Length: 112
Image 1 (cartoon, one colour):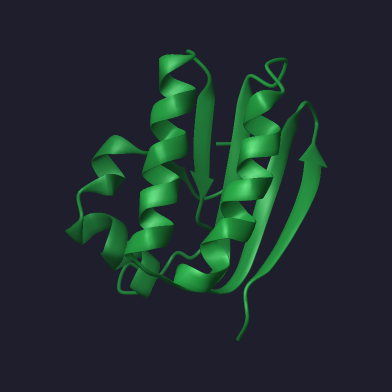
Image 2 (cartoon, rainbow, N blue to C red; image 1 turned 60 degrees about the vertical axis):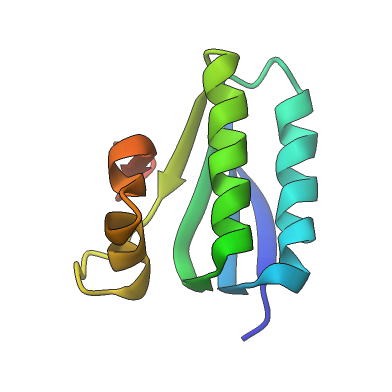
């Protein structure tokens, strides 16, 4: 399934919803959208919803870590939303194996 990127607004925080596979050729789409949101310094929080993403390659993870670092330096929140409760699901295991679950703020719902 090709990557689909949808921007939604949840209160004051925009949510970038990703669906499908996040691979090298599609990473520029995500990076462009996140960059536009990042440049809006009034936004104290940006959420990246990967609940419907089935795969993320190393390029995609690199973008996630990059924007997490940028936002952290600005004392702003970058939140990953992963609503998949299955601990053996690909993304849950990926975040755990890479120890990103200890570095990134990952929540199951945006309200968390």
